[in-house]
Length: 139
Image (cartoon, rainbow, N blue to C red; front, side):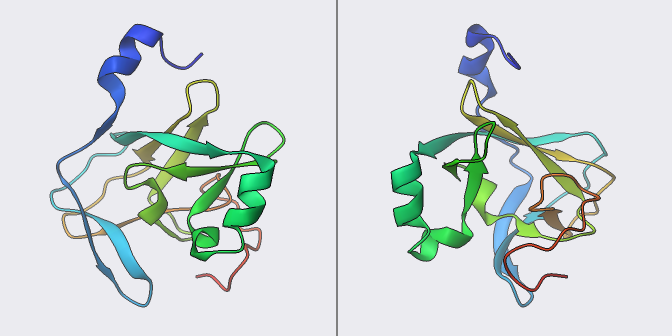
């Protein structure tokens, strides 16, 4: 278990130095409004877990681009309740995400220093250095 139940009361958070703003050629994205040091936890957010049936329905809608595969076998879906589903993809990501299946949480952490004004990216393959193709043409 990543967090104790007592700690969960205090761990849902988004740092106030994050903002959602227009992203060049990507719709919206998450940006740093101040410099961020490597290894800083930026966000811990609950997720709405979707059953296999609900995931299939969601994948037929606009939500397809915003849900994550969820569970040990990746058969379920999850929609992040904070900024989680707004982070854009990059194979040169500056953040990583971690999933806590037991507590239905996702955590975003900076993997190197980030400048004020810089967009925050995650690799949709879950590992920052995984260059496997994703479901759309990506940078």
